[in-house]
Image (tube, rainbow, N blue to C red; front, top):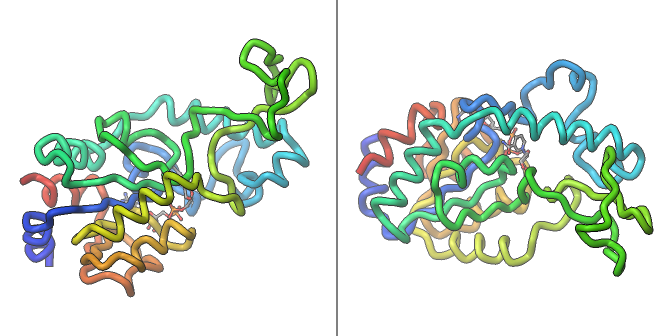
Length: 238
Ligand code: NAD
């Protein structure tokens, strides 16, 4: 089966690699399915990564993001990220990365034009519609920082559960999915939509790379059971 998939990679004119949290697991970034550790062990991410949670307890949610940013700042892209970026360097324009990850590791590995469906954890934005006073020079440091004049809060620039995806990024991802002949689905449980819908809508062949069963296995032409860092370097070596 790996041989078939390697042939599909060689023959494909346009490839989309759709990645999820498992892509970064071997860098040391826990997936949402992994148990949280330390201070955060008693919270479920689904209860923290929402606008309601932030409005109810901004400091708690902000501090969780501070700890995730610190953790992500200490890790490096793994061999899987490197293999993807290397393939893109050798074959300009043939592979588009669409990721649900907010950790920026594809970008740090050197992948160009990453479509980050769920935003970037390193960035902030205003919680409520910014007024004239909400400008960079008028931010009061705090947990979270706020507008010194009107109190509008800064929040992480990620897509929380229940929120819309950035429209242009989603449109670009849909177009890439609609025009590819091969989609590699790496390290995603396939339960979060609309990201998972890209794998169901593509006319191209779908290959799932995941050490465990996923919700997208039934949409796949082939399933490779293994990890991103173990499978991708061999698959994308050409
Ligand atoms: P998920 O946590 O729901 O699923 C992770 C998947 O990765 C599972 O299917 C698991 O079997 C697989 N996996 C685990 N280790 C792997 C490995 N080494 N190689 C390949 N696959 C592996 O993640 P999801 O599907 O991305 O959805 C959860 C949401 O959480 C996403 O929207 C994402 O934005 C967010 N999230 C992002 C990060 C990140 O940026 N690194 C981390 C956690 C959660």
